Image (cartoon, rainbow, N blue to C red; front, side):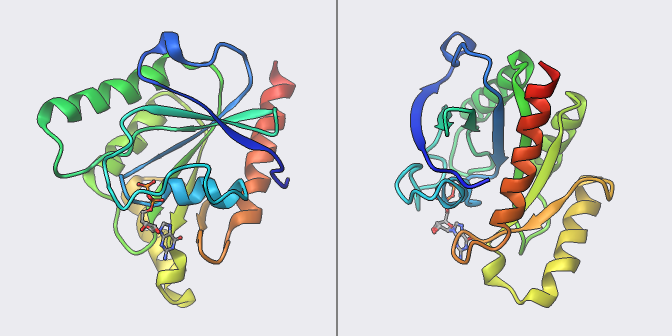
Length: 200
Ligand code: GDP
């Protein structure tokens, strides 16, 4: 799969504002500043599609992008930004839980993690949520250009162990700078989207 057409559709806080059609959703979750916007821009071949922040915690809405008129990329608000209030953290939790709860269109979750670091407590909580809802997940171990290739495997296994993921869950070293992992991610997205349409 090579993405040819991608555009921003809308941002939503409440379920009544989510898109109403039945096209599948590929959902991005991860810590703020982990590289979700850069990931979206890289796989969609459009440097300006999602804002890359430098301002962590900015994205507080569920953002929908239409890809090749076939599926949505859904960017959920990043978590773990230290400077937000308790109330904002609660709102974040509610927004994620509401989205996961109300959405029957989820084809795949992409859990984005920094390949250099062990998952945080919030990453672990996120993985538990995904498991609770029984959603298919793939790990994106991003910023792989920042460490030597020989460290990829041990870091990937650290992430796997901390999140309690079996060997059946792929974790893909990825870089928005070198496009490392891009083809594999697109392939896995394609399979999930086709499965979704086959099951309709
Ligand atoms: P978001 O908050 O999750 O959307 O994160 P951004 O995409 O805005 O990225 C946060 C910071 O990490 C920015 O300064 C990006 O340039 C940088 N970044 C994101 N992905 C990569 C990557 O694959 N490699 C490197 N070296 N930097 C990255």
